Length: 150
Ligand code: AMP
Image 1 (cartoon, rainbow, N blue to C red):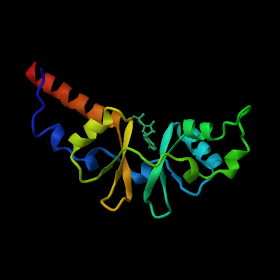
Image 2: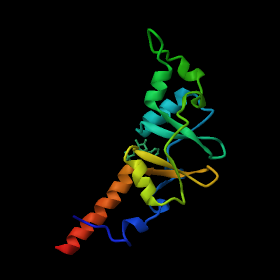
Image 3: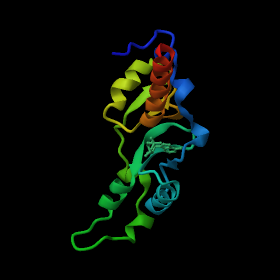
Image 4: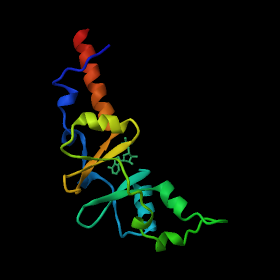
């Protein structure tokens, strides 16, 4: 059994580990679905944040959400991609944390989410915290601990 030292993982903050907003692929509420699909496909991510022009966080858009929204009764209505806007179909209720919250809270949420959106107290987008980044950090700390015991 490995116990984490208090000055290790739990001393880290969300800011230490998050991907800052300028490096996060995103779309805007008013973009059409064709643009969103283009960004999703080019970036290789299945879900990305939806922001407004002031960088307020509104939701998430994903390839499955887009495909579902253009699914007709008998065919995929590709012409809808140009007509529909991201805000009409995005998921508004999303896993989000304030940047000031402790990493422990993120750990709990990341059990069921591949990433969390990080925002200021006022709801402005600051970045994302992917589960892989947190696991990577934990892995490093555990390896270091094991090496120091050998
Ligand atoms: P990863 O653990 O790096 O595979 O990231 C998990 C999920 O977080 C991805 O599938 C994306 O939905 C999201 N993500 C990670 N990095 C970025 C990024 N730079 N821009 C937008 N979304 C991202």
